[in-house]
Length: 416
Image (cartoon, rainbow, N blue to C red; front, top):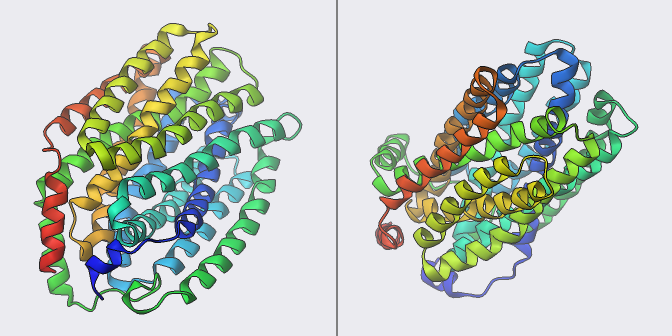
């Protein structure tokens, strides 16, 4: 198939909406658990460090599974089926939590979620980047917007349920709509796959290449300066995000005395702001360059986190939460699109898997470090640590030449 012709042809956005809806489902459960953390922490008498270690376990398992997941996508293909399978995987471990009364069993259940969540991204993002090659920033940001919708709606719904149900009952009830949605998305992905032909088929098999050739090409990704810089920058940005997700609900419940419904409302504000920002930033990065958008968004994230801490329990607190969500999530899809541009097309799944693997490593250490800092000093110092991580991410991105990634990838694809 002529790649240039395919890229130039206009495409319906229905594929983007379909995949983004699936992404929203994978994030629904994660957002639910962040809201439950303060309740679980109080019931089990957990310290800040122990709360942080729960999320560290999930992201560490995710880091380990991301890389082989990306390889699997490139070698096997069948991306539609892999996306559908990941949707079924995510909800089940959360249902098992209703039966746990032991801290370490809870950690195991949460860790299992990391595998299902991280099969989704290499398949979904590489598919979108290939099918909409001239609009990567926009479509990947819309995909991120789907995750934001799941994370925005879940806290509000679950917060309302917690007003009259225990958290154990909520995790069981919460599985029901997830299973129904997963079945619907599986059916839609099946119909979607039958509408494609040739090598553009979303469920086409992976490229027929020997294992030795594949691993030689994969090793070249580790030497790809642009990809590794973007991945490292993404890791530090995600340290900020995961630390905020884990401890903002705890802070609201423990320090400010918010009810589960009010905590859910604040998390919805955070995600809704990100929902608005993501496609705007993606479109701007397509027009103005990834670096300009990434640097400005991350700088403003650090400033607004400090403002959030200083606002304390005043009316300005929720305003700063919204600003943090806007700038923090604005850059996520931009960095993902940038990583794809740094990667040859035939290794797109592996490139995404590598980026998410490095990112998950950063995410895995952030909650534990925050917890240790909060126990040793106070939770406000922990939030200042998060402002520091986004500053480090920005410094790494400053070393990226603007526009070089696109040129390199175009050359690589032309030779492929």
